[in-house]
Each structure stands twice: as C-alpha cells, then as structure tokens.
Amino acid sequence: MRNHGSQRLIFLTGLSGSGKSAVAFRLAQALHCRLVDVDNEIEKRTGTSIRNLFATDGERRFREIETEVITDLIQKENTNASQRTIIALGGGALMSEQNVATVRKSGTLVYLSVTCQVAADRLHNHCDRPLTLDGNGEPLSKEKLTARLETLLHLRESDYTQADFTIDTTSLSVEQVCQDIMKQLSDSV
Image 1 (cartoon, rainbow, N blue to C red):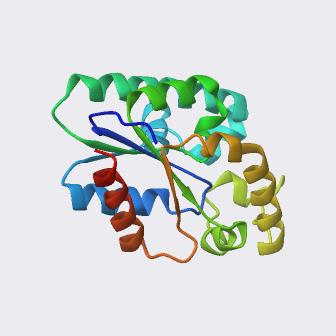
Image 2: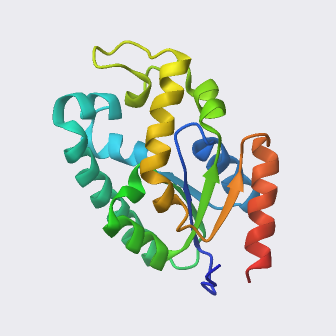
C-alpha cells in the first residue's frame, strides 16, 4: 500500500453494485467530511441522466466527460486543502489510464470488490443504469446481467486492483465496509 501522508481525498472504485454510493455516503458521515459522486457531477454538468448521455452521445463521449469531471473535482478539492473528501468513482472510470494516474497521485484509492452474482442481485430492476438494460432499453434478466458484469469485471479488474487496498463487500453491510475502510486508513498512517 502506498502511504500518502495525507488521506484527504479517498476514492472508491468497483463494479456497479459493489456499494460505492452507499458506502461513500456512510463513510462521509462517519468521517464528517464532504462527499462527491462523480456520476452525479456528470449529470449536473451535462443537465441529463447518465442513461440519456449514453443513449444520445455514446460511451466514448461519456468517458471524455467523466475524465474532465474527475480532473476538475481533484483540482477543486485541492484548493480546499484542509477538508477530507470521499469521491465515489463510476464503475468504468479507471478504464482511462489518465484517470488512474490522476487518482493514484491525488489520494487513496479503495477497491470495493463484489461477486458478480451479488452485484446483479443488488442492481436488478434498477433501470436507471445503462448496464442493466439491453439494446432496446429493456431490463436484462438477472442471468444476463450477471454475465454482463462478469465481462466488465474481466475487462476492469486489472484497473481496480491498482487500488491501495481492497474490501470485499459481498457479504458485508455498509457499516462493516466503512469500519474496514477506516481501519485500513488508520493502519496506513
């Protein structure tokens, strides 16, 4: 694990369904710090949902905007050097080498791992996420969603494992994940 001296920026990464948003919210409460969700910031900046952005502009444009937002957020957070911030990254944010380099040099990166079956259980019937829908905009069955998540994990796992540490969220509550993260953070100082 890298030691940053300062753990002011804490980034959460992992597959959709790993618990990034829920953990980020609870961790920010526990640590009394700011919370930023990159997907929410993208929606604010573009004035549209992630789903619509994928449908109208495609994944490539979405990834360009995502990189711009991550870079801007880090610059903004670095101007407020006294405040700790939890930043929930989108599941594919680390597919960009630029994002990996920027995040790794800017703070502590935590990979929330999860089995694809559990992630599919958590995501099933969440039609606001592009990855839960087929090409016609219809919800995927749990089996097809699990298969899609397995494909994504295969493509992204080497990016995720560049994290400073990993917490397996498969059988843990949000509170337990937060406790594990806080323990890892305190052990690394």
